[in-house]
Amino acid sequence: MQITHKTFRNIGLLGRPDKSSVVETLCLIHDHLVSRGLHPVFDQETAQLVPYTDPQTVSRALLGEIVDLVIVVGGDGSLLHAARALVHHNTPVIGVNRGRLGFLTDIKPSEVIFKLDQVLRGEFQLDRRFLLEMEIRSQGNIIYNAIALNDIVLHSGKSVHMIDFEMNIDGQYVYRQHSDGLIVSTPTGSTAYALSGGGPIVHPGMDAIVLVPMHPHTLSSRPIVVGGHSEIKLAIRENRVMPMVSADGQNSVSLNVGDCLHIRKYPFKLNLLHPPGYDFYMACRTKLGWNQDFDSFHQQD
Image (cartoon, rainbow, N blue to C red; front, side, top):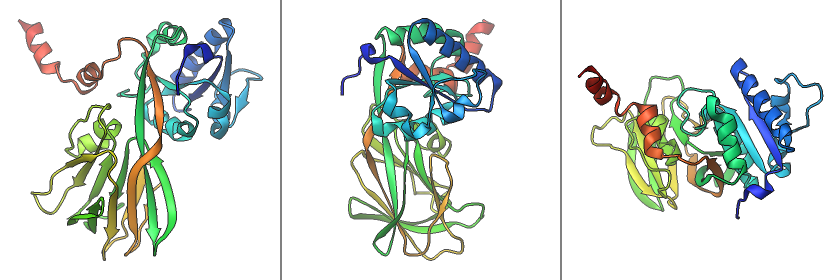
């Protein structure tokens, strides 16, 4: 699929209601799009936040079908939610950061009009991110499925007890493990929960899946990076607690003894757009403070 700015006529607007600053930025973008002769469309949830009397709206599930581009205003969590709803439609997405880190929503609010105009002129970098899909299978039947842009996490819920599971990759037995759980992450998610669990930072262009044990009982159990086309199977053993699984931190689903969790790459990719000048390593420097001590040291000289 070729993405060209000439098709950017109907522009979706999506945000979360947790901050007044989100509403301010949404209104600024809406009015600017109208002034350019374009057609902004709010999803129904976002439309309840803005002060317009009769904005054009559509359900979030259908937004990707009728717009050519979606602008997400909020934090990375807002973009994760949008990605899961839009990925089936191949609708390109750009993010305006009104959250904390902003690895995915990388446009600063102070630069939003300038950066947005660049994108609308066709000046952007296309960044295709893959997602993961999971299936819970019980006695061979699929009883639950979900998708995630960041990660799928097997965990013990609120319990302090470790969980017992076996892991196979591409049909090969890897290990049986006692731990607090396992983070299965995309490269996109490698700078999120997997990073706090001791996992590596993986460049988003890599075709790889990261497996990060959570507080394993054996010190020799370390993070593993496998190919992006690998299929991971986690089989639940007898446990004192009921293990749970979540996709991108959404609602957790319980797993019973004998259930199997299958995780693989999702067939659709997210088309993430960046304005000119986007640099993953610069994002790491600024968001993770890589040069902070070095810069502070030289400022004192």
